[in-house]
Image (cartoon, rainbow, N blue to C red; front, top):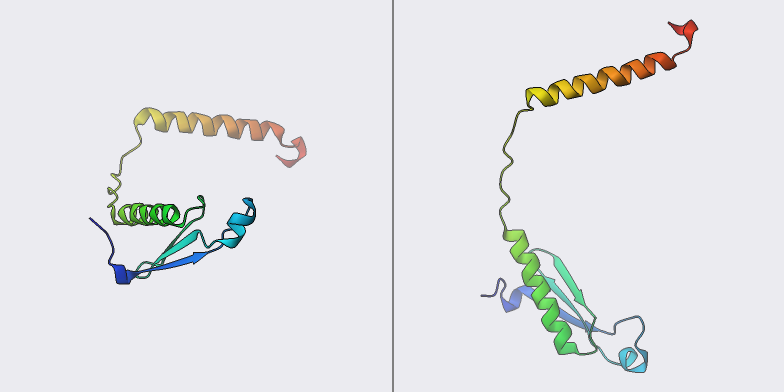
Length: 108
């Protein structure tokens, strides 16, 4: 099942950059797919084949749209346990004691 209609996407072909020599510099093998309603842009330029790059770009677009449609579970608020509160207080006391010892005697 497609998550988009043909009129919702815009496909551009261009010359990809990077290593690859003369063949890569002369063919329009890179593909840019824009999903107009959401503004998602996917670029595929891995292969020298335009068809393969187009397939990969459309697969990536579908993956991103599915991820966007996913509903996140709401966070369940939890309370800190009594033991964790005690550990935190002990750590604060230890740190405060360390800082108190470092103070210059004349400032007390």
